Picture 1 (tube, helix red, strand yellow):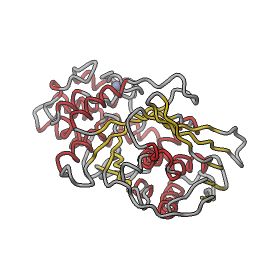
Picture 2 (cartoon, rainbow, N blue to C red):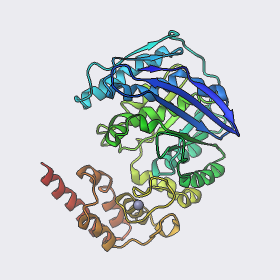
Picture 3 (tube, rainbow, N blue to C red):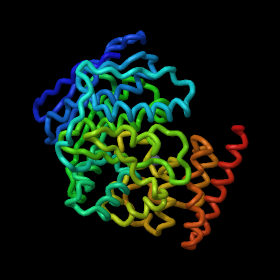
Length: 382
Ligand SMILES: [Zn+2]
């Protein structure tokens, strides 16, 4: 692929970066990608060609392209780091095309200095991102360069063009969280998801790099980006955002940190539960991509409600449409086969002893049955 020179514009307070991706080997029409925000940020940040490279490299790889040619200077540290991430992904997913594309730069390789020493974090208002922000607030002094000063709330366009705009459900929650944490909210809209249109590829391979690219887009105002970890400390299975990948999306003027994998999901939920603003604005639901509501009945809602019950905080959490939790509710997991795979059970294991320890044996027994269902599901899949 050839990545055109990124161009930025500012219209009606909306700052927008556009670049054209032209396929060379794959038989696909050019793709005009855009990333935009209405937050007050430095417009030069949108012109970092490293951001476009990172966002588009993996779709190019999947498309069988032989090269990724960038019209702009590329950071040599990112260039070398990418090879490490590629090696891990190629080992995990042998079906990916081989060899991967070669990165070329029309303007050579240039080491830049960081412009500002400050950190930003991705914010979906899920347990992981709220825990990362809370941990940062409670452990890092505000004058330290690792202290989070901005959060990026990412929304994908519902189609490849820029109309209609994505639903703004999650933004309302993020506004409240950012205000209370004293950080800038940077709502970002992009059509990048439509470059591939493959949810499995997005989840398994691409999304860590795409989230990291959001940090690079703002490299004129930050030099560190936290990607909240979505896996468990004792179970780092292959996944598109991973401790063996995300760090290797760093370069000389931008460090990417896969943050929070030292905490279990229950520990993260405890951090969130100790912050009333986060508890009010929690968005975990699998049934509502927009982040407007939590249905209370999907697997992830049930898992989060169970963790909050084990912490004695479910009644304090107004974020669920259906805030009740009974053994019958947990029985729906088996009845409707709510686990996407037997791996999902990993998140439930720690909930059983926590429920028994706080005297919720009724829910503990129900979680015991959830774990038994997961074992049966695993046996069936062999
Ligand atoms: Zn839900």
